[in-house]
Image 1 (cartoon, rainbow, N blue to C red):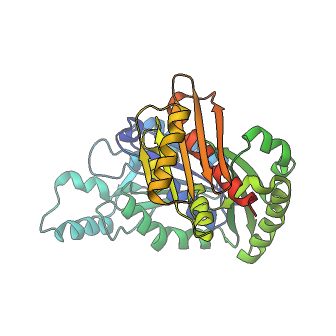
Image 2: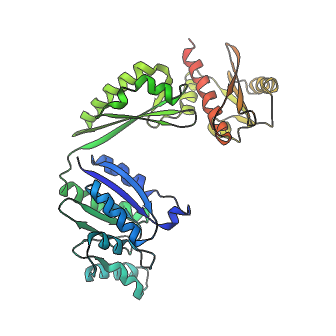
Image 3: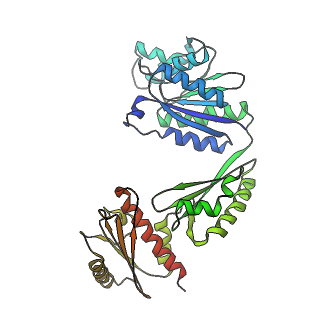
Length: 375
């Protein structure tokens, strides 16, 4: 199995000044090639630490991809760090320099002397043309490894990845597999309970099964590696069937499905209109459902009265109300349907800032399961 690790480089990422989107993009593309991603890390602009990280990754993985640190300034140390990790010096490449000159000329400028740094690469490296930026890329090969250094600018990195790196990887490592993923979304059960029900599936080696807990929602990830998409689909379908048999209606959707969209679809299929009121949620329900009003602090009795009035004014068949009590870490929910009114009190043990989203998801799931059970 071909394996890879990703090293993102930039002190600005460690300081929280920018968000690293390159790792996610690379990871999804590596998955599509059937490459196992072992580890991702971020290193600041320090030549020695980057070199250490590269050596460490080379011991574990066949492919090491770095992003960032290829600019013209002294705090762009990737070229030197890769050379140090490989035990070689950097060397000037005239062809890469001409690329830098040509790119800068498109802006009507001439390159400064410090931009010559971008034409240096580790000795013996394969130079990679950058058609949309001034930072050439490179690949350093060993008998086992390929160390690939890409720009940190996302649109540059993405273009070079598809034009140059993916074809190189396919040829160098004879890649003929892919990894496909299916994500099932659950609500109404905690991560621990789901684990008890499908724990044996989580021990499978292919497909692999993993859990990811969110606020009021738990995802089940099924990942299959195969030579063809249809083969991967069949492997996933067999495991998904077992998960659905064990978890039943606690699974509300898959992949891009969202809980609120499932609820709105159930309402629409009945030809109904839904109104909602929130209090103490900071707009969580308002952002999720249309026709939601936000009111100041309410108790459950006043929430019920306000919900009745809103339902009557809008001539809606369904109404949902949620009020969160941050200090008590609890919430009250009210649901009004043609079949009658229901109230529900829930308590929460997590961080207070997550209570609004948690209460929103539990309220949506309460409405979903009620609608699904109705004849």
